[in-house]
Length: 127
Image 1 (cartoon, helix red, strand yellow):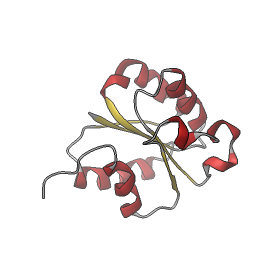
Image 2 (spheres, rainbow, N blue to C red):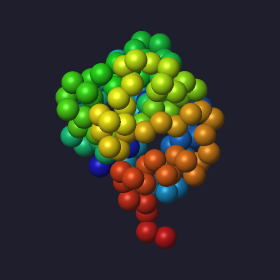
Image 3 (cartoon, rainbow, N blue to C red):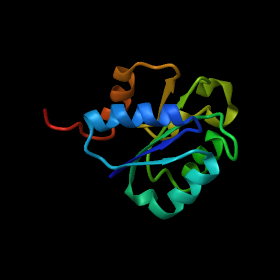
């Protein structure tokens, strides 16, 4: 299963990929906007273990990704990785209730918190 990272900042994508590759064997796919993410999900949602999604992006924010996943019955968990928090948005008022593995990482977050969220969904590499 794949780990899907959606963020419009290249530096953030690269750091997240570095952290994730060090701990997990899963393939990583990425998008730089919500609308690009939806195009990828339309083809690969059944192969995505978890979506790690920024909120504020041009060409479709994290909300369009969340709504797409909700409309499709959550083929994968959604983790909001943003300077914003779910409580700031009405459409995220039921984030955790909507899927038990959904989560929130408030930027800047520590690597340990990233791993704590992802470990609930995917298995780390064997030591």
